[in-house]
Structures are given as structure tokens and as C-alpha cells.
Amino acid sequence: MMQYDVIIIGAGVAGLYAASLLPKEKKVLIINKRETFKCNSFYAQGGIALAKDRDDIPLHIKDTQEAGAGLCDEEAVKILSHNSRSVIDDLIARGFEFDCDEAGNLLYTKEAAHSTSRIIHAGGDATGRYVHYFLLKNNQHSMLSDARVVDLLIKDGECYGVTVLDNRQSTNIYAKDIIIASGGVGSLFEYHTNAPCISADMQGLCLMKDIKLEHMEMMQFHPTVFVNSDNAQKLLLTEALRGEGATIEDENGKRFLYEYDERGELASRDIVSKSIYDYTKKTGLKTYLNLKNFDYHYFVQRFPNIYKNLRDIGFNVPDQRVPISPAFHYAIGGIKTDLKARIPNVKRLYAIGEVASVRVHGANRLASNSLLEGLVFAKEAVNDILSNTKPKKTLEFEVSDEIMSLKEDKSKKNELRQIMWQNVSIVRTKSGLNDALDRINALLKENIGKLLKFRLLTAKEIVLSALAREKSIGVHTISQEKE
Image (cartoon, rainbow, N blue to C red):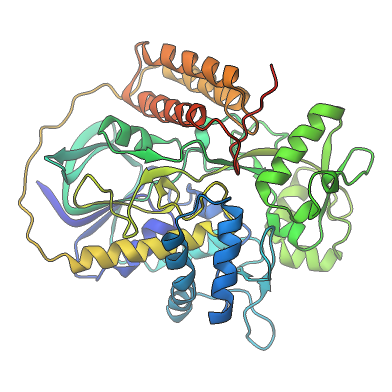
């Protein structure tokens, strides 16, 4: 019987930071589905938002709540903002280096819907990658890679461990406390910016275990993505580009965003995504990101990875403009938690990062609050775990022999991606959502493996949540037009 103090499901920034806060003498196991770099944290470009000082806290709270369109939990936002400086200072104290000026002062940049420059970054446009690598390099705990969690061992409202699928073998692993930090739902959509293995497994598993998901209709689409490739994961072009002068235009060079919002390119990303969607639909014109405002040498230094990636596929940036489209980017909703990251109806089970809904983002996540949320609520979860000194009895479970996948599941996964992109993406209609629901229900009735069932259950919950919210708000837009 494998027994740990803490099991962490997921090795992104949220999971790794939680691990870093757990003492070395604790027996901790981090379970990672694929290679360690295949997580959304690795691909986070823009940076980490924070309240720069005490005076900036109320402004950061206000910006977060305004972006969230009134659906944020005010206490959650306060926790996020009040603790933002301390988690950043902790990373710096551990030896992490953010981008600084020659005098050693942190460099702050601005992104859409922020009232001031308060976003710090590392490696120019590789903040997530740098923080992820730093936490991985300094990790002192055990890690099980290329393994996926396929069951939560729950009895009488308490979690005792997980079932792991490793080399096609299922094994039960037990722990006093379990943290879910498995990321979002990107692989449900045909066009997305997520790591390929982010496929809504844990959300679907939670539904099977009667654990509540909330705000699942709140799916954020990033407005500036290069989608003209065969890869499922598309090339994200960070919002920091627009924050520092990039513009959006149609194929004739017209900057059309001001027709939709007086802030133009600096409107919140849901507004920019919907504006591009609407303008393209009305005019039939293609949309481009124009980078000509950047000095060449500054662009190469500030956005080295974007520069290299775009050059590699043939774009002479920053002189040449790049075709863009919105694509799925971030799951705002998720597993419902309290402000200590606890899952309310299951003891000793926590959720942090993108997989969780602590209601800090409301109806629309403010740019660069995502890595911050992962850090802050990882700390809240670990503090709660360390404060709980109650003994926990051990309980052994039988290993499930469920069929995990079938050969036919792959084509059904692709069908699901198309259903979600066509009917449950940037602008939704009731008829489109009902069509999606019918098709998802039909797939659920077929002979399928458990892993596909996870995806379908999560997708169904997104659709049901979208149908239940009849008025448009934030990233959730219901069109009254007939299809």
C-alpha cells in the first residue's frame, strides 16, 4: 500500500508551487500526466499581475472585479491582491529572477483592462516557462510522470487517495491530503492555445463523483492567436504585444476595434475576441496583428520566443503583419472550492489553479491574473493542510478494472472538438447549444472508454451551464439571432 502525506495531481506552476511550500520531510508525490513541460503554465507568455504596493491593492481589486463583470467573489479577489506581493517576493527570495532594468528594479508592463502597468515578466515573453522551470529545478519531492489519475478514492465524504493509470496498469495510491492542480479544458475545442494533454479529465471525474463544478459556461477565448497550422495547439500571441503598441486591423489596414469599444486594442480580451468574431462575420475580411510600431531590436529582446516562432514559419516580424483569430484559451470556471481551496463536500481534497473555481475571475479573467491565482491559492491550500493535525485513518480500496480507452475513441474526440468549436465557443445560440447537447448525449450512449467519458461529461456541463445562463455577461455571449 503506497501511502503519502500529500498527493498533487498536476505539475504546472500551481502544483509545483504547492509542493515547494510543503516541508522536505513530508512525503509528497506529484503526479504528472505527460512530460513535465506539457502544461499550460509552460506556455504562459505575458507575465504575472500583482498589486505593486499597498496603494495599488484597491486598484488591482477594482480592475479584477470590473473585468469579472460583477461575478467575482470580493473576498477571493481581496485574498488574491493582498497576497500577490508576498508570493512574488517569496519566488525572488528563493532565487527566481524577473526581468529588471539596469538598476535592478522590476520592469512592469501593461495589458488590457489594467489601469496601470503592474505586470512583471521573465525571459521577455516566457514568464510561465521560466517560473515553471525554476520550480521544477528546485523541486525536492517525488514525481510520477507519464501517469494519469483515473479515479478519486472517496468514501463517506472523505478522499483517501487516487487511482493512477501507469503503463496501462491501474494502481491505487493513498494520501492524507490530495490537491488537484490538473489545468483546464483546452482539448475540448478545435482551436486552442493549451498544452495538448489538457483534456478536462479531472473535471469529468469530479462530476462522476458528485463534486460540483461551477461557472463552466465561462470559457475565455484569446483574441490574438495564429491558427493557420495543423497542430491542435495554436500559437498564442500575448496580450502584452497590444499592451506595448501592436494593433489589430483588417486586410485593408483598417483598425476596426474602436467601432466596438473606445479602448480599442486595450479593451478586455472578451470584448476584443467578440469584436473580431462579429467584424469578420459581417465583412468577410481577414484580421491581422500589426507589429510595425515596434523597434526591431526591442522586439527581439522583449518577445524573443514569439520572434523566433513567427520567423520559423515565414513571417518577417515586426515588419510583416500576422493573420490572427480568436481561440480557446482559459477555463474560468471549474471545481468549486472555498477560499482555502478546499472542495466543500469532500474532506482532505483541494483544487487550485485553472482546474478550480474560487470565483476570483468572475465572468472574465483579467489578463495575467492566472499565474497569480495559481500561486496565491496554492499557498492557501498548503497552509490549510499544514494546520490540520488531526489523524486520518487508512482505508484500502479495490482497484477498478474499467476500460480506459477504445480504438474508436479518437475519432469521437475529434468530433467533440468540432461540436464545441462550432456551437459552444465565442458567440452561442440556444439552438446551437441544444444541438451540441443532443450530440454529446448521443456520444455518451455509445460504447466508449472512461477517458473519453471524462471529456464528454465536462463538455456537457459547459453546455448545460451556458443554457442555464440566458443573458450575456463577460465571456459568455448568447446571441438572440436565428441561425
